[in-house]
Amino acid sequence: MPRIRFRLWYLAIAVGLAAMVAALIRNELDHDRNAVRDPACRSRALSLYCQLLVYVRSHGRPPPLVALDVEGTPAHSWRALVWAEGHPEFLVHYDFRLPWRSESNLGAATSAVSDFACENSQAVPFRYTNFVALVDGGLSSLDFVGAGTPDGEARIVLIEAPDSKIRWTEPRDVSPADIAKFSDVAEPGGYAVALSDGTVKRFTREEILQRWARAKRAAGATKNPSR
Image (cartoon, rainbow, N blue to C red; front, side):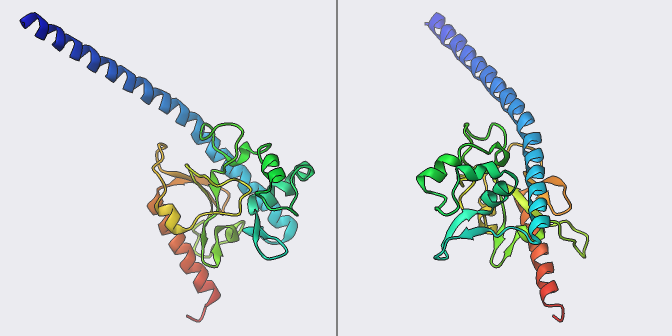
């Protein structure tokens, strides 16, 4: 009987050590993946912000959040508009006369666009965007592309959505309530955020919401200076 107990005790130790080694390997792999993903998120957020700037300089205004069809129904995302602006070959396959979810447009949307996704966040081909605008009533974070700020605080323009199931051509973004439900991200500091001064930083959910609230108050004060 003592020999059986000794063997069980030895087996328990062996299983525990194996679990510890497996956990260490998983943590190391996650660290390596995040080490690649973080600079990719930052560089792609900055690239997308630069594309927005080009759009603003070409049209004199930021892109609309959604492109409407003839009946006034949201048909395409601002991401599709910005991408088509700088990549006219996209229009060979993507037809803005059809809704984004049409079979041909869904097929065309799988051909681009690692630019809208962070590394290792989803399988290739990239269909979902990791970068979204913040929409709050009549105010959109796209309104702040290239905008000056009287209070000196750069405004949020784009936000990393780590577990997004939003297709990059889909006319959908996020609200403050959506951000409050974001899942945790492994990168220190939180989510990659492109700001109106052309920098990309990482903010926690709370920092995003607090900065947005300040921007919203400032925008309201600008529209109603007498108040």
